[in-house]
Length: 593
Image (tube, rainbow, N blue to C red; front, side):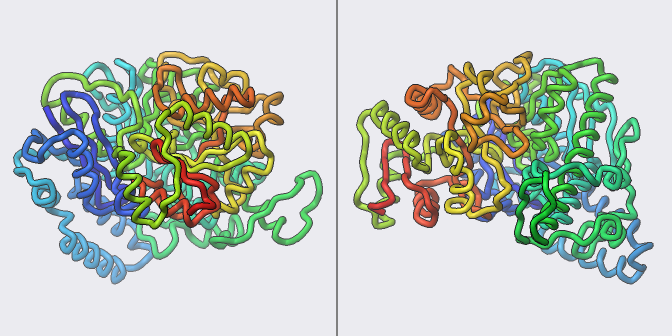
């Protein structure tokens, strides 16, 4: 059976293809459109999935969509209605009217027709699932667990903002849920906006900033949201989710915490053992402390929610999805402090809903359980010939083609050990927001200034942003304080770079470029059964330096999606301070570009 899953119309639209219970392809539309968080109908992603599988659209048995649009619109109207007491009846009437007209204009009420026309399939073969149902299916069916406590956490779907289910075999039995507007995801997004970052984009920046701060505002942040025993309760006086104007928080939050941080404001934190040297440093410390306090409260809420869910189900294997499941700091604490086996679906946000909808449709249609997701390398692949054609089109005629892969990897390891920064493009691109060695910027972790160099000259981004280490899995314990490997095996969060752990104190001087200011790192384990060139490159770098670890960050510039095609890679290479570009077996040197 061949099933296509889709998500679109909010953000991070995507397509995923299931063939006979196996995930064969999954792509996010932004990789092709180059429009970050693209919400449009995923025409290009659909075409890429079908092309990889060698299928015609007519061969599809079912198409599954990741949410219920009418229920979602009902929730939007509910929010406007509840918020009208603050905004006024006329504002309520005008806003509802504008929203209704917008949905009619965009065809959101008739999603079946849009899918039928966009895919080329009859409406009788289209299935719609709930937003959190799709998240839950993506977590459980992709996991290695036959039985699991399944948890979803995000901003909001139709009405739900979090859910607990018991996954067993083919079934997902709902246990409990939290409903809008009480939402840990909306809380974190509102605080992201307060700290000067874009909602649904800058949440991970808050995590990076938190490492520079202390939880000095913990008592104030705790007033905003609390764990109630069965979910989260927000003090709505501080937020404007129901009927927002421009910002998702109110003047009451400003009165509590001071003025919000201005986007792109300078950020600098010096030695905390001494008073701030200037106003910029004092302001940076203030917002870093707020970020640390927000992160601490968020972690405690997630831990309490998961602990209560596990106590209720009695099952200590946990599968998670939803945008909040990408909070890698919280995931690390879940593993360490609760001692659970944890699986996090690598595209845990809304793009992953496309995959979950397809998996749920397969389970219901066939009465069979889909195969676990073994790899996140599910995007398009480009050949050496396509890379050469892209170089020719860009006017680049001087490059090296290696006929021996081992020689290419030896040269790459030598360059990296010498301090070079390489744009690395190999095989199929990754599913999810993390670069896992297919579309990566790679550098040595041994050089103290490497983090600053890449932030300033290559990524052009904020100085507080850390970089992740990729490590040969068998030697990871030499450098990182990992939780014991349990039921998740090679599908544990660290396989997909979704958990933060401590860098061992004795290892921190050895790998300064991937050690955050708080002594932590978001690790990627690269296992021995991986036949990828990335694994072999780590081994060769390890032989040269004694450290089988590389700095691994996404191959993109700030504000852009991760590269997909050779043309994308060449464009980013030309606009950045990268020293070398490696695509398939081709090495391009910047001096010849």
